[in-house]
Image (tube, rainbow, N blue to C red; front, side):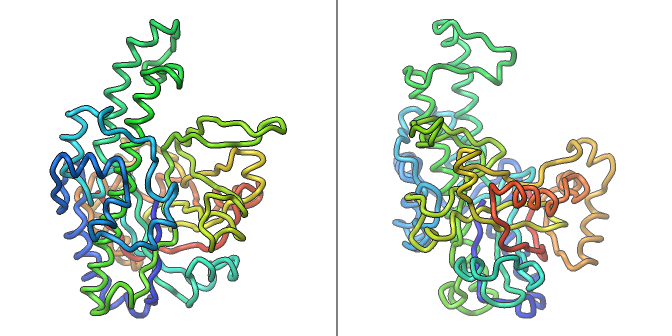
Length: 384
């Protein structure tokens, strides 16, 4: 998830909403198998998967200030491109700057005064004016990360025999972390994480270009600053206090997101007193939230919280109950302009196919593992 500000208001954007969304739809390809504008050779791609967002910024796709507002500063340093298959490279090399499909999205949102729950913290993160426009992105490493995982599932299938491990489901295949196979996979997975950071960085660059083109001002003048970028399907080595002692552990957040509290040494200076920004995505009809991490999360959930609203029905059921074209028209009548690659894909993402995001966020707030700061309402969306 990645969230950035603008100094535009709903009043500024509404007359040009269709133009803005249409340009984003053109400049940020979405859908299965789509290809991005950024062309790199294999050496450049290997450099990118080992250095993540920094590679993009070094090549002009971002600002130096972006790096400090990305989890791990946009790079897991253990990445080793030699641990990635040629097939994975072939799948990923042409997809930089693309959204993909499913529940991935690029959304223009409004922070109305009624949805600001902690004004002081909101201001520290750049939410400073009534009905301010922000942009949220949800996407990963595309087919590249999926291929890396698929490759190592096959490796683990064989390796488990050597380590006398048996599992009830092949998807749970595993090996000891310090084994050769375990380290190879961790280094390959780090390449996938870095590619995801880089993909979102390129998309951020394109978003800035589109807004600058439509509103005839530079991205700097529009104050299109990154609030934060955080993952929700990643494994990393972290230190946590367990039974009173600090221990180094493998923290796997799958369908979860990091929620580090105030004072954590991995947070940028401007967020040290308030905690890590936490981006919680909802459905394209209901909106999303910005929260902050808490000390209670550090104490009770290994610095973790929820990542989104979660589905209440399968994609198949959603397609039976909703029509994408009808949904698109209905949303436009409610002031939400959506461009989608597939109408069936749009039907899968209907708001009623998801839990109530406000209820989910209230649970996080009441449990104390995240602090609610701002709620966002959608007005424009690009879907794969």
